[in-house]
Amino acid sequence: MDTEHGPMLSMRTDRIVPEFRPLPIPIPEDSESSRETEQVASDEYSEETPVQDSLSFAIMVPADHIIDTRNPLGREPVLLPKYDMNSSQNIHNYESRIYAQYEASPDAKAEISVSMTGYNEWWILGWQWNSYSEWMNVVLSGSKHGWVTANGTLVTGDGVYKE
Image (tube, rainbow, N blue to C red; front, side, top):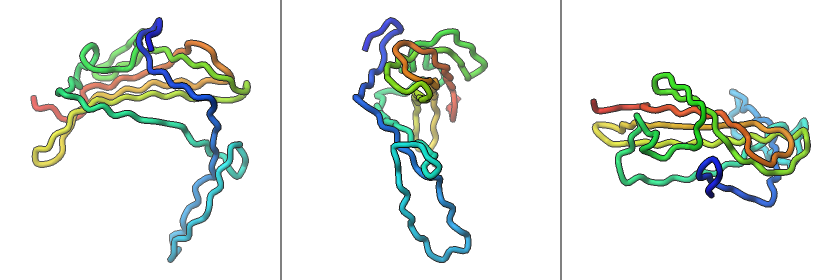
């Protein structure tokens, strides 16, 4: 979808119902048998179900070329937009924008995280690789209807290089 901040991925759903789970149950060290206990999920927070599950999805797109993992900006797919970028060696921090439109109670918290990785891998007496990775994140309260500022980080040049 084209926007005033550039092309964006658009996700829509009629409703997201949160799911809460109990805390993990430790297995005693002296236990000779592993017994499975049924953990009941709930759509509400409670003392019995204090851990909220996250909703996530992933997409993998194979590249048809060697990815420039040292200098991906302007050469490879990256998250956009990037404003006020500050760089220190291979770490680049920036501000970005995410459009959020949803109804929620005033005390509801929503966290939106987006990440992306580009990598090359090959086998020479063992697996070797190099990569760049990027993520942005924002925590929101209550209902939202518009652009929000998200903080992002791009890490380049991670891994093995043949020079």
